[in-house]
Image 1 (cartoon, rainbow over the protein chains, first blue to last red):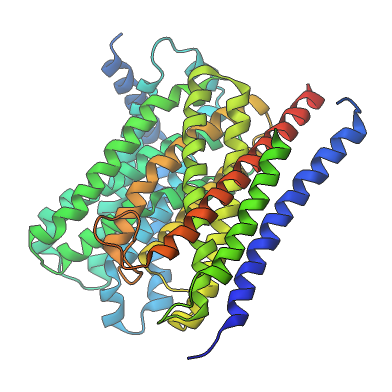
Image 2 (cartoon, rainbow over the protein chains, first blue to last red; image 1 turned 180 degrees about the vertical axis):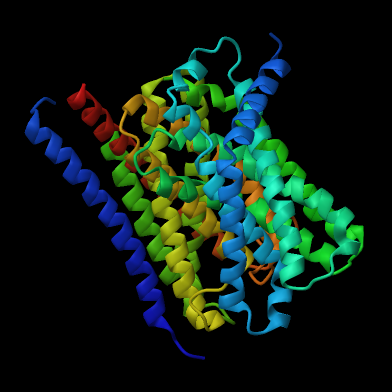
Length: 40
Length: 225
Length: 215
């Protein structure tokens, strides 16, 4: 039976990229705001 | 003024406007006739295949026509500055919703019946045996469409990209009703027993009830502004 | 608070990774590919949770007009959509070696895709309605209808097709999978849920800032 490890790696990579991507989106928005009005 | 009377007045107003102008009904009938031709050209080489796909094509036509028709459901009010009149109407605004849904339902049913007749003529299909079942399936399937469609039409009437947003919102929500209607129609046209059709009919009824109740409860919130 | 949540989530995810690869045994019939389930299943479960939160927040907003409820609904829908996307993508990647095809119109896949499209429309609506208060109201209505629609979608599509494995969680009966599988899935569900909470907290904060800036 084929190992198919490539698929496993791909799946976990896609998951990681999506989650990291959203995290970076949040970070960017938060930084953007902090720059414009330094408050907290 | 009672709730029912208010709903009736909205329905009556739309019916009279439509009868005088005849714009929407005629346009929808023409549009659905064109769809029929398009289906014939794109799928018609093999008659067997077309007849097999008939339930799907039928409901596809109903949905596409409905999208065009419902998308304009509140356009009349918008164009003639009657929107504020709607907003200022006293009492429960859901009566307006009911009237609108009834009006849209009737409009769609008229188009559907005529389209069904045209389908049988153009594609030479015999639906005689299935008529009683279809008489039940068509309204049940259309009520769900009209209920959510009217709600979303009221919402998107304000939006710039109305033509895009309305189908985008409505179609995914419509899938269960569409599935149920197509499957039920398939069973009916194949001459299957009522037993085969019943689970789908139950799904349709459940959907219709859920959508109507949701619409009645939330329409007020949409009209506020 | 949110930093603690975030760290906890990361710890959870790391644990899930370790468990999924080092502790859980290689599955007999599917081989290594089965390990994809350890992210595929938690993603959709937490997505359901997220959309449930959207439903509640939408109702709260319509009844009480609390801005925080609107922000929570917005954030929760975004994360829910993200997780649903992950579920669909990992499902397709799992499907190719297992079923031989990237896509099939079976009950579960179809159902989840419809859910994806509904909430994508939800976010699109929010984008396109300019007035903030109206956008919140309309989104709340769509959020409620989308959630109410899910059982209908589930049943209609399930009756229409059944190729997928019978839903092992949402259906009564004995589970065909070994206990260790469920343990890893559980760990990842908790991790994904913590991450969801973290994301929602940060997102609502960003939304609040943006609202203040425009006020």
